[in-house]
Length: 343
Ligand SMILES: [Zn+2]
Image (cartoon, rainbow, N blue to C red):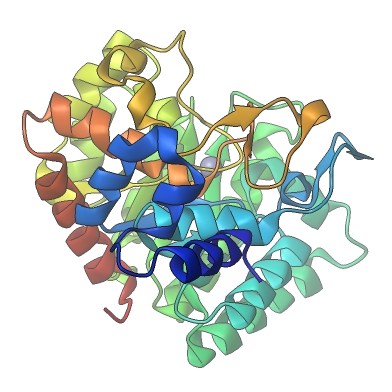
């Protein structure tokens, strides 16, 4: 059970005549963020919820007890209605599907091999068997309604120490073969690799009618406009909003191509980021503490959570000079349409 619900029951029993949201009682210092969540509904299209950090493990060592349910509850309290859990290799994709099965209509999964995991395939005794299993997994889970996108796939030349560029390209191309058979939208990863990414992907587009989203976008203005002209949507999180250039790019994304995400546990908005000037302390949903001083019910400093999507929305809305509720609704609609979520 969720602690916030316990908290609410206690509160409701004592004060049943007052209509108040549960987290208002638990986190009374953060009333402002609650008021926003009353009005906004979110789909976090990129949440790495299979990450061991949500079980309390950091760099292979357990620092605190698991608080996965609390993480989900905080997201729900903030207005997050759906989360797309990222699959980054075969095992992670299976785990993402398991989470989606356990949290129907709240969590959904993607299946695919992230470019930084390309060596998982290459070093597998039978790489083609690995690819077949990815395809079968995606096909079955799509039929079951738990998988809504194929990915994340793509290229990452900023982290070649995980997998060399030629191996990344090999399995990007191989997975596009699979994508052409699946009829799922693509969940794409693109970092410092625009020319190769475009040259591999664009000729395949006639066979990929569901299109896709380039998530965690950190590219240039020109790259953004180019991707939009090819029909792609752009996923925005804290990493997209890190620099002044990033803010200008996000400001220019056409509204019908904007999707919001957190990339949790990564890509939080930090005080040193250009975006932080658009936030104040009321934009934090919940107080955070260092992992060494973990307390159930509080966030862990430096570990991004899906509830932080409200901060991303606040920044993007101000860049777009519009009400945050209006921006949220646009992003909601874009995500519902691409991934065919039930409303
Ligand atoms: Zn990514």
